[in-house]
Length: 150
Length: 112
Image (cartoon, rainbow over all chains, first blue to last red; front, top):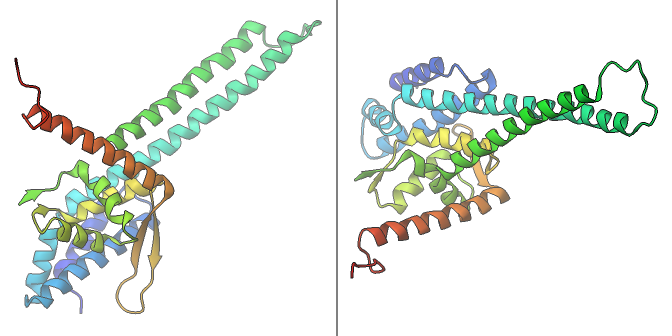
């Protein structure tokens, strides 16, 4: 038999999980439901009515708005880090390609006259993206270390 | 009764999981048992912490479809998680020693 308080909690949480993908949302709600149902069962085993047990379980678990906000923040952070890391790596790859081209071109004795980029341009095209790429990757690493340090 | 600080939840989860794989409800019960009910935890706050630990590769989750009851996601510590737990425990113990010193513990340096 469905518990109205529990269903209301799950519904409230579900509507707040805006930053999670549908699959992530479904999995998270399943976990939360399992935990709440176990709490309710525990309170019923102690002699509480189903409604009182659900009320106590929800109080013990915490408000759905707070949980939803925290889960959204984690999901957003993960998306940002994945995107930023991908962008940073893209910049590094770009700079490597130009860097290799620069070294190859610089080592040539007879440089072709119709090559579109000067040596200076090639150095800039590799150094600037490399700087941004390293900065992105370094920033992400520092954020991760700061988070782990608590 | 004292509320468990949000920042302390991840390392406590890692410690509980170092003793064996567990799901969220069981982790909450273990914290309750170990603290003898004196540490108050808003149990839902375990889940954002579990997500972060999972995203960082420190724990791995696996769904366990039981014969009866809802499916549960069990978490276990990864190798990186074990190493991270040791680092955080050492950092915590160093911090406690420093605070103890500052608060005039046994190793406090008294003014001449």
